[in-house]
Image (cartoon, rainbow, N blue to C red):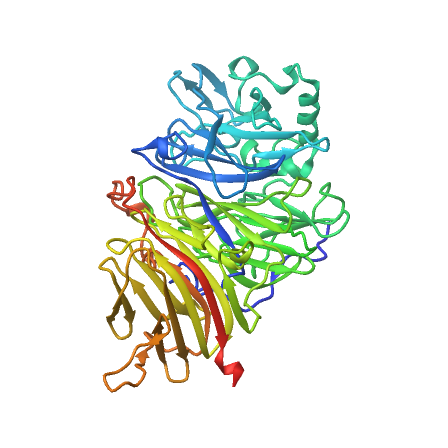
Length: 610
């Protein structure tokens, strides 16, 4: 089939990957929440495994709940007793329920001979690893299947696929959240396994006719099974698109741009097109304008009838950032690159093939239930934590209102804010405002409000520190590229500081006492003024005191609040494979919580008023 158009990036924005955020301006209202925070010393504070390698998440929305499955190994990729975990949440924010969806699989003592003629003997002491590309499939009758893939690795750098696969397993997720029995839906027969050597029965052996029919529906769905190409190998007719010469097509996803027209996407900028719902395909081609490497890509149609593509627009495979979204009206021409997440927690644990950054992003596929007006993307961070991003639809960028007057205790007000919320550093709306708390020793909480572009503005912020002897809060007015021009800091010594050419203490603050800061910033002079509770700071002669910007800026575009300094690592010169072989000190224990409640924000564009 000849291609009549493949996806491409038509924009001119490309990230500067010397920064994790890439100097890319964020999309409006994105909320990023940490689902699981790996913890080797306290498994009970995480998902109960104590495993520090967590990767390849997938997501679904079923009977009003969010479910995310991810695989995990004790330390690194392709080693140890692998298993898959199913996390669930009623709101997609709080993730407290974790269940083992596919437990460790101890290969029985046996001998196998693959289709390549290679014979392997197992002693009975070998553990399989999980390595699935997809996890969820919802049938036309509404039943939800959860699947995974067991394989084994002769060496850690060898993938557990094809002749090193054992096979794909499946079980049903019931509406009440319970899981049914495990069956093999597609064993890797070509690897040499026999029915007697498999630890689970075949799906045809299930006494549940509805489950058997659901499994058969999955097996007959060519777009779903195409995701199995590298796992089960492409020897079977169930895989429509075979691997290319010296090229494997990995991590397939697809979306329709017409009744029967389907776009297929893979890692490394590879694309293809089908005009008959996936029965036949154009040749797989590289779309060079889609800058990406081995981190996966997710493309889909959004609830407003447009299209989104979420990926890391970098050619680097060990430094997987920033996480961005582009949008399209037709599913082919993508533009308006915007940031999804540019905050990257330090990698806390050693492990083989643990690349820096945001990776293996996945959303909810076509044909499955979705929450309204929200694009959900799950992803792995450093291959040790699992996150979810809620991206409001329509996806848009800069704030267009000329003035903002927001009471953050009112419902829906926080919808306009961007949040970065680790499990130990949460940002949540309360009856009194947006509460930012932090007990994470190596990360922070961030709340960010996009502002109308301005060169001269006034911004007023009312907040209450809940302590004055520990913790800190950074407040910054930033450029569209994310550079800080104006900064104030509530420090642990009970003093408010301004950053000019250095940090200058300007006032004291008290625990539990609200304070209103009003800043007027002028990008033509690179000066700003500050009033505290309505009283401007003054020079000894009574004139209003002016403070230098910390850097020159032509325009300001956002207010950023963080419970710690921005983390400027990793850098492109850091190799994730040569980090010290020990746990980041103190990272498994929370510190004393510090919290700040943001009550109100007012903004006016003085340049526009003039």
